[in-house]
Amino acid sequence: MTANREYVTYVLDLLEPVLPVRTNRFFGGVGISSGPAQFAMIMKNSLYFVVDDTTRPTYERAGMGAFSYVTKKGRIQVRRYFELPEEILLDPVELLSWARESIRIARDETRKKKKKPRRR
Image (cartoon, helix red, strand yellow):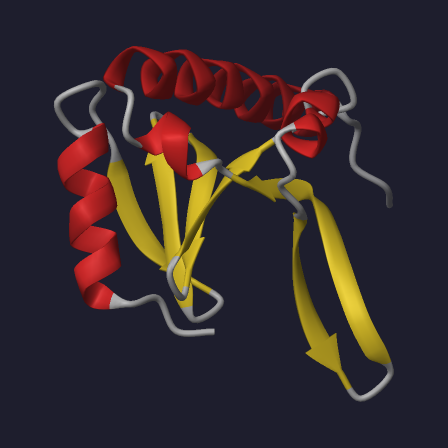
């Protein structure tokens, strides 16, 4: 699932004027973070944003699907990440809105994980 280098550059060129981001290697792709929270990832030529139960229907109505991959046991869907519609990527105002929403979700999840007591 290697991320296409040209596509990564294209996405970052669109995102960076809108908000500061950093990248990291992420399961053969590229993770995109704002602050401590990873809110997006790029796999091959697709950009995926973090979603939750309230935002997932918006992506589904736009005809977008969850990130998935194939194992020996079949196709696995990762419903935490949904592909971003191309028209959103081309509209800086909408891109900022969708990115901020995804960042909020990712940060909320990060905070929840930190608050969980550790098992012994």
